[in-house]
Length: 577
Image 1 (cartoon, rainbow, N blue to C red):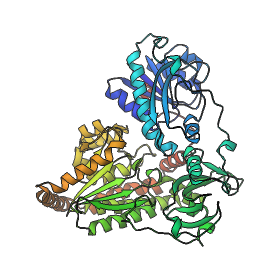
Image 2: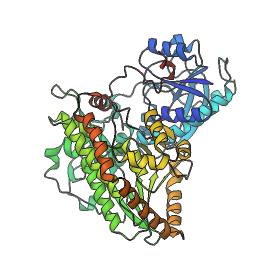
Image 3: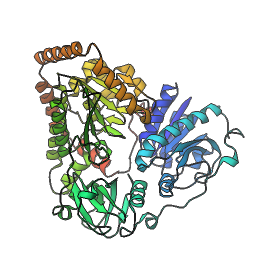
């Protein structure tokens, strides 16, 4: 069928639907929800047999839903209505939830139900649940609805989802007061639940410090070493975070965004130690070893070995997957430490929800907001991440693996491809391109690592196409070497088993020797320094040249500016205009 995806933003759910529907043989176009007239025009141009709205902040216009079959993907159980459905479910402590495909009608979330799929709620942030369980259930629900749909139908079959199964209720908008907590009384569990429910947007409000909190982690393992203090007090720092006491323990708070004020028109989410630098400075640092025994003692990096020391496992779990200059430096040092260990296989595991998305656009924007140069900070950041990739490429005495439990995009995708093998699961989305960020050229040695995997012609098509790739397609193209599981939950253990097998393989020594010979041959043909110099020469124009496209695109991304139009690589119905 011809299916139009109407979405507020081309977020992860929209991308997964785009990938899945195309893989199933449907002709898919995307239109960003900008205005009713724009939606009407898109429908007239594409003439879809079905419109699916995976992520909206406004109603679909009556001029569309009254004439076309339109489905809304709602992150709630059947019968649940209203905004912030997932936020409320986390705050209420729901253990089971669901995703529902509804037919659009005049009243929000009140249309006939085409499909509803249950999901189990982890103790995780809203963003993490959305990226994993909600996306998985949403795809399953859309598949169910499609199996029941034939063009020309104006309602679901009577037995699609019986009314008795529709256990939700209508909710009003979630207010600031409902999110607010009392730091002098709240327990660790209550704080974590409140921050997790507000993760991504809008953040947990704090009226005293006039900020929004994000990125909270249980600090119970650090408490014996921390200063005593009353609930609500800050007692230690670690990396980007401060340890704040709760009524029965404490939490690490990693990121904060100041509230909007007269002298700060566009506050930016930043590490807490930067936002509250004066508060953080006198607090004691509570570092933990990179190779600590208990990975639950929170830090952004962790290294461990298993299989009798043959496999090294380096996890770098940076908030939202981006890496600023300092984080790149930390990862570089961790790689160098791992390189001193006598392992046969080194696995770069990224984080639970993101492998890596390249340079840190928020940190770059924050540097400019503080009176610095966005171009200079961009340059420092790209040089720092290039150093990380170079370290990985130079590891010729062992095999390296990128294990993608989460998505990878832009420079993070090419960091992954710098390893000898790339493993992933079926739910991972890859965006191996830069051009959407204001025609950014990109570095991270992509002009070396991508063509060596897929060839020059295919590399050109991938980077210029600017489309998200599912793992099965990426595997066919040569970007991914193995798909090990259906979802993130099963991937970690599968990757560990495969890493141990790789380290124990009889051909390990021969393969490592061949890898070293290939690297020497490639270096003789064209040094890695030459690839880097050429890439950075292009990047210098992006950062310092006359064309401001990169800086404009970064500003729009960081501050979530409203879209003015849908890019033509997504809105295929507009290409001929």
